Structures are given as structure tokens and as C-alpha cells.
Image (cartoon, rainbow, N blue to C red; front, top):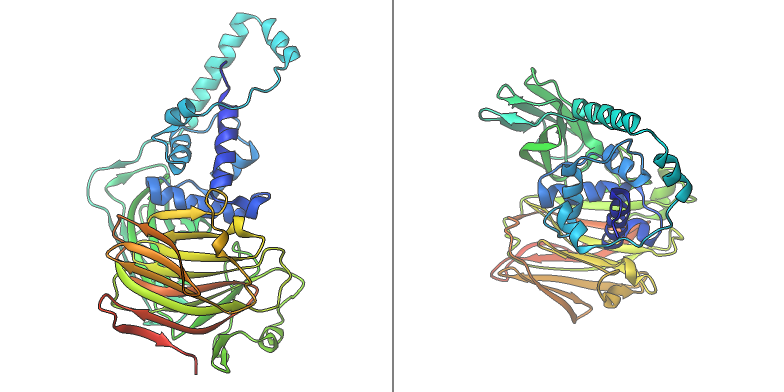
Length: 417
């Protein structure tokens, strides 16, 4: 039995939702699509805009998506291309609408052929031209301040050797931070509101021409609060006291001072961005963390991230009963709770948990409260560690953090005393 392209696309969407745990197991969110765009770009080099992904997930295409888009979706599911995905997957057969078939049966052949010809002409006229690069592409960045946020970054570029329909600069992995670019210009300035190691993209159509690292250094620990990742700016706590009683912690009193709406769900993200002089091939990170009783989410979580020159390592801990939402990433290897048994990452998030990420010559191990849980061997080179980040559902506390280098030497430590 033959299946329609729409049926294969629906099946592909379903598999992506399951692999990346869209909506924590429920309906997808814009944040899910933003992360999917990032994963596709990293795996394939193809940049799918947020609007393209939204149309795909809403079935809002007047004509079939471009083959390059479908190939990128298939690749993120580890297939060679769209044809390979279709060869290895078979949608469930649906009911055939006999009335619709009968209607088409009486359409005169000439009218049908004319309609198909017109549709083909429109499709050919509307499809974007291929990017043509005839020479070198210059792309550089310069910060206006040494450390701290906000900071302006001045990008210089030269697109004189590139022919394309459209050009963009994207400040980081987030496609929401993509803006159109004048191909005849040579300067664009952007403000970064969050410290960290960002990889700016110079884009033509949907292809990344060049990437430029932008390392925004923090002045110690820099906390941010987000109601939604679509927010361009976060609520910041600059010049506020965020350590007390030996803990890194945003107090309820401080939240009220900032007029935080406790009736809404929110996340806090605390970053320490600096030059650690430590390779992601050999390090040992140990920290003790817990959640605070601030929000009432059904599945509260906390996550520790190691930001490297190329990407991130992470361990996501979930409250007991929500283990399906747990995940970790070591090097290029991603494990999610919907496809793997990550029940050991289900803990009482409101009690202290000691998490240890240990990497020796690209052999990674996750240790929780002294128990050795997972081991992975990754292949790719991710460069040096550039930032440490904690993400809490609501707010959380950090008791201590210690980072050791290849020889066991302490390269960074904070007990928050």
C-alpha cells in the first residue's frame, strides 16, 4: 500500500516528539521547536527557521515542504535522508475518503493537468535560489566591554562574494535571535543580555556561511529568571546578594523585591562564564544541588550544564515519578528517558543531591550520590570548558561546586562561604 507524503511527515513529527520529549510528554511548545532547530543545525548544518518548523507542526504548508527540509528532519532521527526514512518506516493506513476520490475521478483530465502545471510553475518560481559562494566570507566580532552584561558586540562581515535570496545574523543557537542583514553593509551591532559562550551565525537563506564565537564573561555567578524562553530579556539580579549561609541561592525575599509573579511557572538560570583552561576531554565536575519549594510544577527538575567551545554536556534530574523527562548529554551522545531507562535520575529534587560528571580521555561517567550510574564514550572534540550553568524549575540552591583538570588539580572551586 502506498502512503502519502503527509502521512510520512506526520510519522516523522511523532518520532521527533518522542525522541526530544516535546512538552515533557504533552503538547509541543515553542521552546521544543527552538531546541529542535538547534539540534538539526548541529547535526546537518542546515538552519530551519522557527517559522518553518511551526508550519510543519501545524500542517500549514500550502505545498509539500522542500526536500532539504525533509532531509534535515530525517537526519536528526539518524536516517541518511528523507528517502531512507520512508524506506524504513510505514505509517498506519488511514481510512480512504471515497467521496473525495470519486470527486477527482470526474475531473476532466485536461483541467487536472493544467492545475498541476500551474502548481509546478508556482513552486519553481517561489523556491529559494541556491546559495552561491565565489570567494572568502569575512565574519568577526568585537565586544565593547571585557565582562558583565548587557554588552554590545559589533559584528563585521563581507558578503560581496555570496549570492543568495536573504541574509541573517543569529546571535546564538536560538533562532529567535536571528535578524535580517543588509548584504551590501559590513557592520551589525547586537546586545547580549546573558553571559556564556555563544556561537553567532552568518546565514544565507538556510545555510550557515560562518560561525563566530562570542564569549561573554560573567562577573562571578550571574542569575537570570525566565517566564518563557521566548522572552528576549530575562529578569536579572545584578548587584543583588545571592549567597547566604554557605549556599548560592535566590531567596524568596529577593524574588518578591523583584515583583516575581509566583502564580506563573518560571525557571532560573545561573551562569559562571570564564576561561577555565580545562579541556572537555579530561575534567571532573562535582556539585551538590537541590530545588526550593517555590513553584508547584507537576514534574519539577534541575539541570547542571557544562558549556564547551562546541556544545554542552548536561545532566537533567527529575522528581520521582517523572523519570521519563530525565536526560543527559555527554559529548555528542544524548539519552532521553522516553527511549532509555533513566529511572536512576529520578530523585527527591527538594533534598540535596551530589552530582559528579567525570571525563577521562572522552570516557564520560555520571555519578549521583556516590553511585556510578552511566558511562559513555564520545568521539568528537568539544574544546575547552567555557562556562558552568545551573537551571532550576523555580529556584534552587547550590552547596558547592568543584572543577578539576586532567591531572586532578582544582581549576575552579566555590563553597559560597
